[in-house]
Image (cartoon, rainbow, N blue to C red):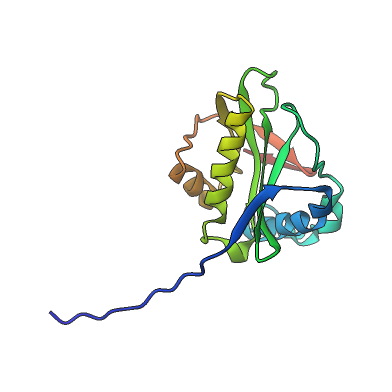
Length: 174
């Protein structure tokens, strides 16, 4: 049998996961904005996505706080550059009853498919466990099939709950 071989190559990243600090706010905001502009294209209005600015978003972060009831953000750093982040904490409206939430997980689009998201979600799961949360939830924008596939592959299951949420001034269904 004659076959054709194709060589595959992969970048072997030297990724570091660490707690976000207030000094990371602008770099995290840049990742946040770029990931929204690519990942939510077609799901949110183009004008809204095009107008997103890291400078506006950076002021909203509260990195460096600690405690079970605080949000915690972990950044993924590859060759000195932040390429993704995950934020966890108590679930909104859970009243501290053992339910945590994955509030955000964003990876810079050039780093999609390189394992950054998998590393971040594994770290998020461990962080939630270390905070004594016995279950966790997350919300996905309706129509975000890429995110749904990612979370399903990690073992997350939709419970069918939907909510309408105002995301930075836009009414969305999640």
